[in-house]
Image 1 (cartoon, rainbow, N blue to C red):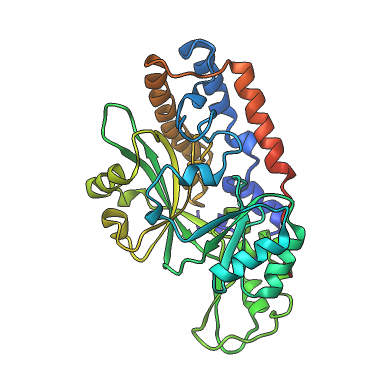
Image 2 (image 1 turned 30 degrees about the vertical axis):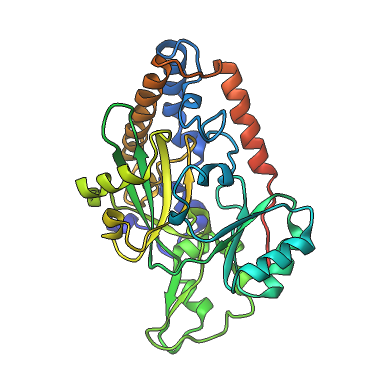
Length: 353
């Protein structure tokens, strides 16, 4: 209902209660985890079946702490932006390699999957120095892509059936439009999403808050398309078409069965033709169906979306197991999953303000 839609006047705690997209993952995944446990114990005879998928990536199929380097190698390299994978031990060598290979701006981010932590746009040498000074992990430098549309495309690739696109999620980046009167900060404070993530965003803009954008000037506040950085996620699954699925059938190897692409394109037709399409990254078996983060969805809508995706995961994993692919025991699978979660928590976010 309209009167229940959040506004900038709402306190963050009330927005959190009202909007399931901000609820704790334990609440969102409660029923899914019960169902998954039942399927592991009964349907898969005690085998932790998610690990049977995408085995070409690693022993967990991208379920726990997978390397982007290993994942990218499974696809045509022309689909990715120019990327360099670097070790954190030799900062001076890394800086020289990066500056010789890229023009500003470019993206730096950890090599291992980490829910957007320490992913930053580097605009100048000062940003680069500050980032490198704080790195305690292997990382990658990546060409900054200027395509106007960023989407998440979730695929299921069964063994004996055509590839299926399960969902498409569009991303609306946090920005403001100038009126020639108000400052950037004054305009931002009218956006409740900014207020939710102000502590994350404000340090990067503190020296620019008072600038008054010209009328109709659009100022991009957050160039990284993560939900926890203020990006609005919009379910665009109505755009799925046979042509789109046919294109992804061509670019996804049969050795990849399940996961989510984050992609940049010039226009929506690029998802059907590949024109102007670049893959930012592919997330394997651990990937979330992020269309559930659309603000229009209530809790039970989210559960419907979750079960649609995880039923496909189980279906394909069962095909793999029936053909002799390995999956560890239930206990071993959960232990490795928790190890991956602890690794991601250890990754320190980086500030370059």
